[in-house]
Amino acid sequence: MNILQECMDAKFIGIGGHIRPDGDCVGSCLALYQYLKKCMPDKYIKVFLEKPADIFSEIKGFREIDSVCSEDTVFDVFFCLDCGEDRLGESRKYFEKAVKTINIDHHISNKGCGTINYIKSQASSTSELIYDLIEKEQLDTELAKAIYVGIIHDTGVFQYSNTLPETMEKAAKLIGYGFDFPRLIQETFYQKTYKQTQITGRALVESMRLLDGKCIVSCVTRTMMEFYEAEPADLDGIVNHLRNIKDVECAIFMYQTDVLEYKVSMRSNENVDVSKVAGYFGGGGHKRAAGCTMKGTFYDCVNNLSLHINKQLEEQEEC
Ligand code: AMP
Ligand code: MN
Ligand code: MN
Image (cartoon, rainbow, N blue to C red):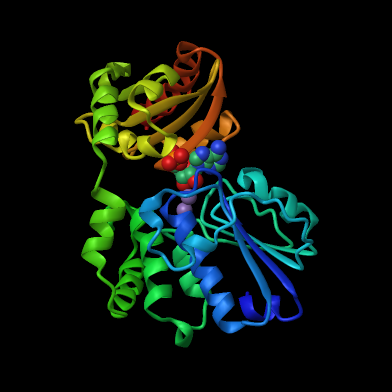
């Protein structure tokens, strides 16, 4: 797929990513936005995302993100990045009306929703796919920085198994553009506010082990979120703390989104494919990181999830 060729005849180009945008989503959308604006300065190009966390504000183009989606434009080309159209949120209406749609993603659960689909489940991140698709002579410091942020967020700073040798080779080329990558890693990935640290502590203290300690679950209720004045974005990273606990095969973190409704995040180590578990409940993701939204009481949700997790663990033991 040649991005520029696909956009050649377009006058209006839109870009959207998933709700509750993470580093890869913001990085890939802003990288594509910068690239298109640089190569096609005469076109009308817009990027739509639910309001991303301020930690990403130093990525070029951040202030041009439209989180309101009030215009009625029919886009000639609309890009759906790091998700399928079901998770686009407000910008889904542009995707549905667009003349041509292009879906670029790395989720194994995504079967492709565009006129053109570029889905590579091996890739570390959608940002890495943007790197692959752009003409390298167009790379500059700001574009490199956007892609780099996406890669470090989805690989846990090159720690997760989705980090391939070529991921690091590309990242090596990117840091050659001379941005302050240690500060970027610290400020966008590791640094947490006091409030985030407090609610993380609370979630860890209240966690429960299931299935002989192979599974662990923690839940943050709406009341807790109100108490700490926390937003969903403040809960990022809690599930990784749970996964790091010795003997844990699968970590579940949930936060309440409504009465009897929870957003579920799962992380696994080796033996559980959490994208399959999330898939049963209408979600998806990757083998070792997936999510879904579930209805019911906390205990209903945990029982249903642990049933599927246990089944996989038992199948593993049989092998
Ligand atoms: P999270 O636990 O929300 O950080 O998500 C872990 C991974 O699963 C990310 O790659 C998400 O994009 C993906 N994911 C989370 N929720 C869903 C969902 N409802 N449908 C498909 N993929 C999801
Ligand atoms: Mn994402
Ligand atoms: Mn991603």
